[in-house]
Length: 73
Image 1 (spheres, one colour):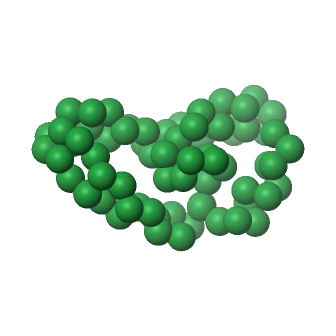
Image 2 (cartoon, one colour):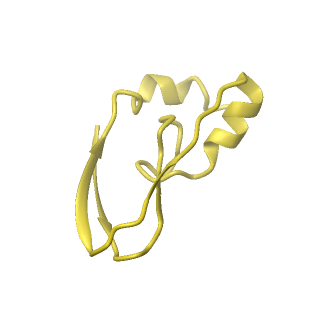
């Protein structure tokens, strides 16, 4: 799944790398719970653009089946 995001100059943006965020593609701190429960080490990707920019994000880790398995977390 692809997501388009508008980022403002110098504003820190956290991008999900685990695929479990409810606010995709933005990180909602889900990795903290998943890391604790599953013993993983997911961290968000932090981006701070030097100018306003519109970006498209996608990842093979962002799929509905994976998210369903952690709905109870």
